[in-house]
Image (cartoon, rainbow, N blue to C red):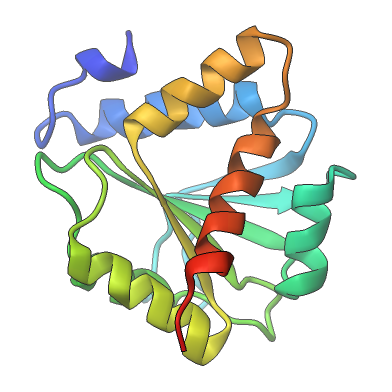
Length: 169
């Protein structure tokens, strides 16, 4: 099933499964040890998907060194509207630099509201926690990049560069 054919809101399981399938295809050489729906040891938090970074590509190496992370986790939001700051705050609570888990990517079908983007930038500026927000269109663009024998990680690198360059005080 095509990602864009999945109905927003209701078909969240299908959206998660399709996003997982796409990520595994795009980053099979960069990410490994795919943990689907893991929970924390206290049982209070559950993530959609966590990957271990194993790549030698500059983008992934920069995440490991600059953000002191070994793992990256993805959250999938098949909302009909953009995500709000609530989803950012919930995700931020799951990021721990001492556990080598300080980077998250939220795949939000329709992006984020302005207050969510502000909250993500605040998490980076004040706590060093990186939360990148991607849309379904971003995933489709990365598929096109791979189809053209280019490197999908370069797309992530561009998004990170824009985030860091435009970050205010």
